[in-house]
Length: 244
Length: 120
Image (tube, rainbow over all chains, first blue to last red; front, side, top):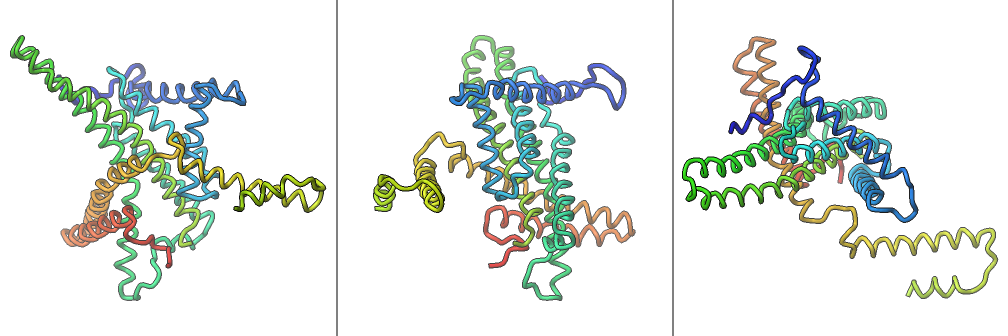
């Protein structure tokens, strides 16, 4: 009945910090699913794609278009990174929609690790490509000198808030969605247990809510993966062209 | 009109070598671009997300942008105080800067303000 219980991490085998937990299991499952899906779907390589192949091509086109729109053609060198992130977040979110499964992205440490991967790439590539010119990202043009320290401090905080907002958004949406779903599903059981037949009639209301929320959660699972991807592209764009 | 023009010129038999070939490639390119532009306008099944999905994606972004600015500002202030023993001045100053950064994040992600490097 505890709506938080579904997020508990339990070690499956191994001890201590390096134990193989249910979280690790679902991460491995996610990666295996993506790999198998892409290998099997593109293995045939037919000119007229079948169902699976068009699904694979659709996901490629979708991410490629997002990268080109947000980061330009130069951004396509980061396509492998962005595509992996998109597929990982999307499939992990969708795995969470299966009853009794574990949602990897509902833990902030996972989403924060993904966000730090993005930001580290942005910083390293930005400095490697543009040198110290990358720091122009923090210095807006046309600012009076006496305002400069204040504005630079605000810009730096704004930049540092990117990984936080990237990770908190994904984690909070998945966590809140799953808790809401569990609470409404719990109402059904509690009503029947407390009021018997009358409760069974009343339970139609929360059951309907749970069904509607399930649909919404599928939309959110996709949207969060999309938002994560598009923000990754926008941040990479800053590294590729700072102050263009 | 331009469509008719390309068709008429493509119909006449010409030498397929040399400069004419690049001319034909260029024509094919413009025709392809036009066809693709028509397709993305009308096609429901194009892989680009529809307007409503993009709007909702932006709505989901805005809420956390502000909070992140405040959290980071407060965090920096707290570390500043802890490192230099200036409590509570670091927290006060950086929390306020964090609020400003949060507002800036929102204005930027909703497209109301320019990015720092951009000039008009």
